[in-house]
Length: 218
Image (tube, rainbow, N blue to C red; front, side, top):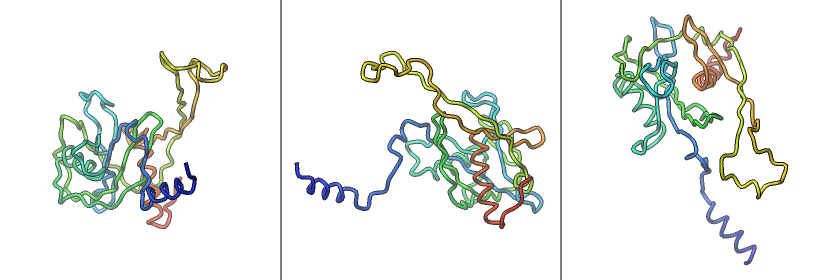
């Protein structure tokens, strides 16, 4: 096998190639919108309280969105589709402001967030099968609130049939601590915004601070 030939072939195969996440299928892939709305002339961020009847994270606070389906032609399409379904708004009521950073969680979830502006008048006719409640938080409050930060630890454990014979003899066979990551909490009235929703919110607030010249944080 000729090295120069292989090098040329690899370079040709990679020409114009856009790198992607190779193991994306290992994650639950979801897309959400971070909705900016106007409340009496003041910018606010809209959140949902998930229905208590849902099997996954019932009663928790989140942004509109959900799993990216095979029929979705892009994460943005999924985020907007889910927002329309959950909030009962019209496509023309959603103005896409731009993508936020992709959030990859240690718990196996990959979230594609998009900042949007929703022009629909409140209250919204939300889908009660999925959404128990919709509420808003003034952007100024969020920009000037320092979140509470706690830590979560992840561990791994090989399952039955794991080929320990292929590994060094001292490889641990029980639970093995792997990583520690921060968990953020924003509290507004009786609402607690935390977890991945809080991490996405933090990224959105960072963008807002850049756009407004750096609003102070207490």
